[in-house]
Image 1 (tube, helix red, strand yellow):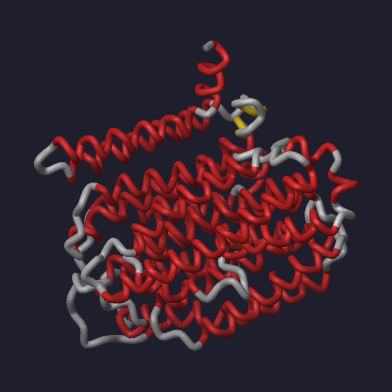
Image 2: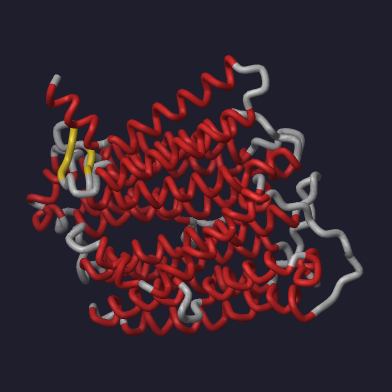
Length: 474
C-alpha cells in the first residue's frame, strides 16, 4: 500500500486530472445548469494540477514497476499539456456559447484528452503509451464532431476516426513485432540491449510501424491528409487543442521512444525521418500559400512545423531533444493565440474564417489585430519572439550533428512561409473593409490571448531560463 500511495503521488498531475474530469462530469449529471460551474471547476482544477506538476518535477524516476515516467520530462510535458487545455477551455467558454454548443461534457472531453496526452508522453512501457494514445484519440474524435448539426464537423470526425483507427493498428502491430524481437514492451528493458536489436530486421520493421503511428499523430507528410479537413471542420478551439496539445504529446512520446530509447544515430531510420521532415516542410509551406481559409492555412502550417521538429528528432542527442521541447512550448502559446483570434472572428454558424474576414481587423479590434500580428511573426520565426529561438535551437543542433543540408531546407521553407503569414498581417493593418461590426469578445478570452502573447514574448526574451528547466531531463 505504501508503494502504491508513493507511486500515485509521483504521478499526481495525471491522477489529479483524472479526478478533475470525474468531478466535472458529476457536476454535469447532478446540476441543472452546470455549464458555468464546470467551467470554473475546470480552470481552477487545471491550475492546481499545474502546481502538482511543478511539485513533482524533482521526483525523477519511474512508477508502477517502471511503466510510467515521473518528474523531470513527464512533469514538464504535463505542464505543456495542462497549459494548452487551460487556455483552450478559457477561450472556449464564450465560443461554444456563441455557436450553441454550451454542453458541459465539452470540458470533460478536454480533460480526458489531456489525461491521455500526459499518459502518452510519460509511458515507459509501449502498452501504457498505446493506452494514452487511444484515450487522447477517442476524446479528440468526439470533440471533432461536437458540432453535430454541422456537416463539415461530422465529416471531420468521421475522417479523423477512420484514419486514426487505421494508424493505431499500425502502431499496435509495431508494438507486437518489437515485443516478439525483444521479449519486452518496457522501454527501459529494451534500451539495455538496443545496440543488438537495431541490427535486426524484425525490430526495424516494428520501429517503422511505430513511426507510421507517430507520423500520423504529428501530421507529417505523407500521413497528413486528414489534417486540413479535420482542422477546418472541427470547432475552432478543438482545432487549436489538436494542433497544440495533441501534437506536443505525440512529439514528446516520439522523443522518448525514438530519440531517448532507440537512438537511431546516423542509421537508415534517420534517413526516413529526414525524408519525412523535408516532405512536411515543403508540402506544408507550399500548399499553405494557396489557402483562402485561415484554419486550413494554419493546418498546412502545422504540417510544416511538424517538419521543423522532425529535424530535431532526426539529429538526436540531448541538445536536439531540448530544442524540440523548446519548440513545442513556443508553438503551443503561438498557435493557441492564433486560433483564439479566429474563434473571435467566427460567427454563430461557424463561418467567417476566410482571409477576407480579417481585412481591416485593426480598425475594428486593434488589440486583437496586434496580438494576431505577434502570433504570425512568431510562426515566421522573427526575433525576439519564441518561434525564432525554437527554430534556432533545432537548426543549431542539426548542424552540430552533420545535418547542414536539412537545416538549409528548413531555412528556405521558412522563407516561403513569410508570404502566407504576412498576408494576414497586411489584410489586418493595411487594408480596409466595409465591415464595421466589432466582434464581441469576452474578458476572460482576451486575458487568455494576452497570456498566450505574454508566453510568446517571455519565452523569446528569456530562452535560457526555459532551457535551464530542461537540464538533465534526458
